Amino acid sequence: MADATTATLKINDSEYELPVLRPTEGPDVLDIRKLYGQADVFTYDPGFTSTASCDSTITFIDGDKGELWYRGYPIEQLAAKSHYLEVCYLLLYGNLPNAEQMEDFERRVTRHTMVHEQMHNFFRGFRRDAHPMATMVAVVGAMSAFYHDSTDINDPWQREVASIRLIAKVPTIAAMAYKYSIGQPFVYPQNELDYASNFLHMCFSVPAEKYVVDPALARAMDRIFTLHADHEQNASTSTVRLAGSSGANPFACIAAGIACLWGPAHGGANQAALEMLREIGTVDRIPEYIAKAKDKSDPFKLMGFGHRVYKNFDPRAKVMKESADEVLDLLGIHNNPTLQVAKELEKIALEDEYFVEKKLYPNVDFYSGIILEAMGFPTSMFTPIFALSRTVGWIAQWKEMIADPQAKIGRPRQLYVGEGKRDYIDVAAR
Ligand code: SDX
Image (cartoon, rainbow, N blue to C red; front, side, top):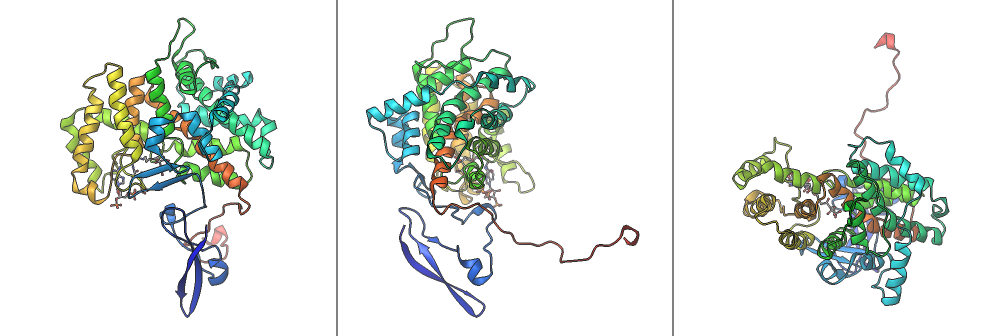
């Protein structure tokens, strides 16, 4: 990016010229890299609401316009016209593949979908009621104990192999976590199935009878994967980048991303949102929960609502809402009470001055749980599916960071507000 202009910062009697960097799209960026060295001051931005942690070519979000682009392509077009593995190729390599490139990529991913047979033992150490996110964090992290030939981050070929292994194996591990939690045998991937169909097969087929994947459900599953694939420098992606900046191996970095995503303020919101909608239960109880959400003394928040960046609407939520109608109709589920509560809650909230003033709208997590529940997934599998989908985004961002010649270990500073220096006092004198 070109330096646009410079900004002048005046501190006491001194002035400092700071470069202003101009992006392809979005706000100009004040380059403060030399500020501490020049002015002996830190900047202060808990939660990084005004801080660009890196430069990136992967995903662009405009929170005011409600725009989300993967490598420049609007999410609405990709959700309608592309498919998840093609989106994986786009996020990883920067452009849409031609037919030959797509076939080669799909073949490479398909032939890595099985996990080392010894990894099955990891699951046996967990209680059956362990949350699948706990098993996913553990087993994805344990991949670094099995795939030593793809942990050297300085070898571009090993980085590529680790990337393909993660995209291929995380769905298998997620499905295994689900099967383990319900006491059913693990189901091996089937290479003749497409990515989404394979995941549904590994989750829902049983040895006792034939399972045929419904292509329309597979399409809906694939679209959910695409909608969640990447999202700029969100909390879990920033976690992956920070872990990767120390030189940690890719499997450890992705495990760190899964751990961060689990939080209810982030990827865990899809489970929390559906549980909230179930707790509300009926449309007549919505005002009671709206009041709770507005009550500063009540920690309750409307799960699936609000976003750090989107201040008008989350474009993914719009696609997800349409998909919810389609999937429920496909499954012959009419008058679904949870969907009715969700739509009425959205309508009431968007007419309430609190939500309008604070610019709170449904986010990607508000409707996704309704679709996943209708497809047969328990709420505990909602965030593992988010993690599965986001694995490619984490990897693309991690690869971009590793390949950046300016990359260095992330090490924020602080505003110290603790005790001043003081001498030790013997216990007898305290
Ligand atoms: C994801 O970053 C990403 O891109 C994330 C994600 C991705 O794809 O990676 O998009 C995925 O994480 C989506 C968000 C899922 N989380 C939820 O749905 C949980 C509910 N939402 C909130 O926790 C909250 O909205 C956040 C965490 C999403 C955003 O929080 P911010 O940007 O820090 O905003 P905030 O908490 O400062 O809220 C601003 C105001 C506050 O009121 P005041 O202190 O100004 O009086 O709005 C209020 C908040 O109390 N508020 C809500 C609310 N969300 C914010 N009030 C009621 N219900 C809510 N959901």
